[in-house]
Amino acid sequence: MNGKKQTKSGRGYHHGDLVEAMVMAALKLIAEFGPAGFTFAEVTRVVGVSPAAPYRHFRDRDALMAFIAQRGFERFTKALEKAWNGGKPDRLTAFKAVGQAYLAFARKEPAYYAAMFEARLSDEHTRALALAGDNAFSVLREAAEVLINTLPDKKRPPAMMVALHVWSMAHGIASLFGGDGQNRKAIPMEPEDLLEAGVLIYLDGLGFSQTP
Amino acid sequence: MNGKKQTKSGRGYHHGDLVEAMVMAALKLIAEFGPAGFTFAEVTRVVGVSPAAPYRHFRDRDALMAFIAQRGFERFTKALEKAWNGGKPDRLTAFKAVGQAYLAFARKEPAYYAAMFEARLSDEHTRALALAGDNAFSVLREAAEVLINTLPDKKRPPAMMVALHVWSMAHGIASLFGGDGQNRKAIPMEPEDLLEAGVLIYLDGLGFSQTP
DNA sequence: CAAATCATGTAAAAGCCCTTTACATGAATG
DNA sequence: CATTCATGTAAAGGGCTTTTACATGATTTG
Image (cartoon, rainbow over all chains, first blue to last red; front, side, top):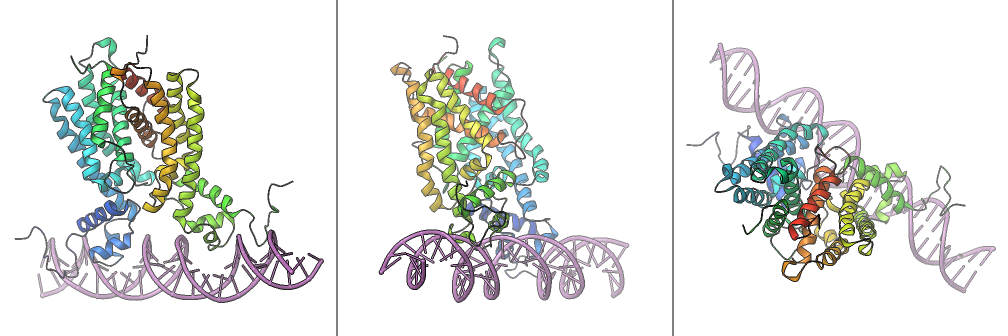
């Protein structure tokens, strides 16, 4: 009947799936108070275990954060891949969709996004996350490569650079105006529209005319 | 001889300028360990006062952070204004200089930058800082306004939008690849060059041809 | 100039969080 | 069924935060 263990309201000595429960509780707290806005002890209280319990699963609070960031990067990568959709229906549309997917992820999963980009993790954890981050970036980089291949050789910029420009603008918009609450500066348009316009102008500068 | 008080190695009962000393010590710690990388108590130890002393000057750790962010925004605004230089020697050159000044500030003053953009301050403090942030943004916005006035009416985009695009790209680059150490992802070019290229392409898209 | 007052710093204490260690429980294994 | 292993608890040490009562010395004022 039940996927895992017993889940009577009062659980027994063992929790059943403490890792998942910790992650879920932490995500809620991050979404509400930011990546620095919760304590390890607070999560144990929400979950209903003793303060020492999580140490069987995570070396410390940062390890929980890194675990969340890791999972976030994986979901992020999938979201970007889905948006790119192999370049269909056409390269330009798909490329813009990747940009929109970037912002959509930041908006819909602010807790993951914060864990990925705003939690200041140790060098060790940062290094371990680098691969996951690179995977996400690769989606954008390859999309850029496919896109610019439609340009004549002479006018073709490095795909890496194009990807970095779009990534930077998307991340800048997400950081400054994205999210759903507190830190967000007020601007007279939706972040998604701002990015869409910015990417269009940028691509125009590369030689993609908007009205061919 | 001395600007302020006695500064014999062993100071007396009163410090003389605890606020400044706290700010300086905090900046050093922020630069090294990030905005979440120091404790209030640690700063008091560095400065050499009791843990309760700072409470005469700052309500709490966040108030110190906000104070630093406030000062950071003021210096940031000045740096951008200096780069704009009234639009001289010409609008385009000056505009690009503003972008470079943005990155230069993030690179040279990582502690201020982190306090301004990466410290998650309370809503209350965030609101109080909004004005200081707006002042900085205004410099870029007015530069954008002057710049796009050279475009024919029909092709002239809103200055606000142009300013937001450039701000976002600069902030994205600074966040992802700027700074000088740990979090910085490795890329095959300097952040400054990446921004310069991005702004040039973007302005090209707006109708500023690079080779008139 | 001396006394009163005010700003600034200290000491001590309460409360919370982090983390480790020794022990308890119950699930899995043979 | 007995053993072993994974997982959770209790207790304790140490650090940080913040408050309160008190100490010091700079500043103001008669």
